[in-house]
Image 1 (cartoon, rainbow, N blue to C red):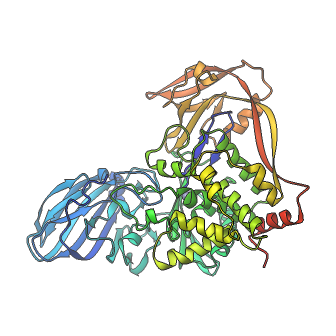
Image 2: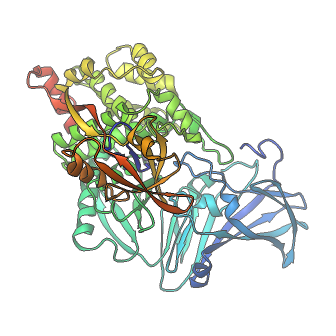
Image 3: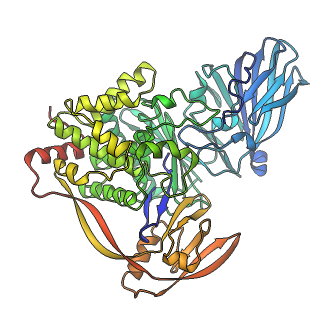
Length: 604
Ligand SMILES: [Zn+2]
């Protein structure tokens, strides 16, 4: 997952990265077999913004069948309670209605009449523009299996199933599932079933060979990505995918599908990864921006790192409760590090571009409260409101860079973080299990010629000490250049979601506080710049950088549904900006490490 987060804590500078155990152990369902699902989405469904789901299975008697809907979609580490979108639940056997009730908020208990075939049906409200959920338009729907496909409680996830899609004759269907007939698809187990979202309706679709396999690009609405912009998407995919394949040495999919939605109601951008696809939801400002190759690279790298190479806390996925892990910084942050590496190794950005991406991440971390990567990994499930909710992306990415440099330095560039990932991929994923923290650090130490990372772990991963940039970067011929500038500071932290940019924190004594901005306000514009424009902070800075302290600054917010204009006064603060640059005095060894990192190579 990658969420669009904008922070304005220290300066007005936007730093953006593109982001219940109920029922468990209580009861077990009667066994069910021959499971199939039917999803119906027609113009009539679209009008009601709903999708109809039917599940058919065979029962061996009158024992109650307990059917549950997941509480979350893997990759989106939050409890969504999809069952709340369900209406009109019914069950029947041989044409006769069956009695049913609920045993917990997302589990239905159906009472069969005896041996035979049972069908349960329900409608799902399809109005959530969220890549973990279901969203319908008059000619289109995105749906996730976690929303529409119940499973038998307590019976495990290792059952095959098929999905048939009923829709308008002229509409398209795209999914990562295995085709098994006209608009019929199969999966060999529930994990795969719910990891392959669908696009149904009218959208653009084309494909190309990359790294020896077919990659498809599906974009909604039709016409939203055509001509030059579509060529640019393909150019980016053709550059980043081979760079990522090289890390692991294999392409794990037979086909890969990039599924992209652009909608004016969405601001920023968000991607959600799957084993052979990902779903991007973008606001118009994000589509076609320089951030997009990075978003594609991030989500596609997940096909190895997290969908296959996964912390043991997340293996296997459970769907009825949160699955916190201290290692999400590896699954998300290091994925983000490799998104940057894929860009520079693939040639989308020059080394300077890679240093700038890294500098941005350093700035993002610097303005946030000191937070341990392990703690941030665990906490994401409850969405902390102090600004650190997604710190494990930029900070985890920087940890990846530091560890990579230390491995390359200790091994004289004979090994790298690539070797760690590939080793664990083979040792853990390929043997059908997740990896542990101990295993991670043992593999890092082995790659680094036996160098101990105990102290690094204690201080910088489990602990909250500031990262040792000045000690580690020179080992790769890099250094941090610190510039002191005066920048306008509003003094808020904010979070972008699908409804807009929301203030999450107001610094006491700041310009925003004096103007009366409050947490929970939606930010509409600042100084005349539309806060939904991803570039607004750059424009703001260039217009106001030379204005006088105290200049009046209109801040338009929405509070309790009503727009208000508050008046802030321009306030400058001293800001130390850290930038990663090449060190002109780097040793030959350090330059070798730097080149190896940027090109994805080690010394043979
Ligand atoms: Zn991610």
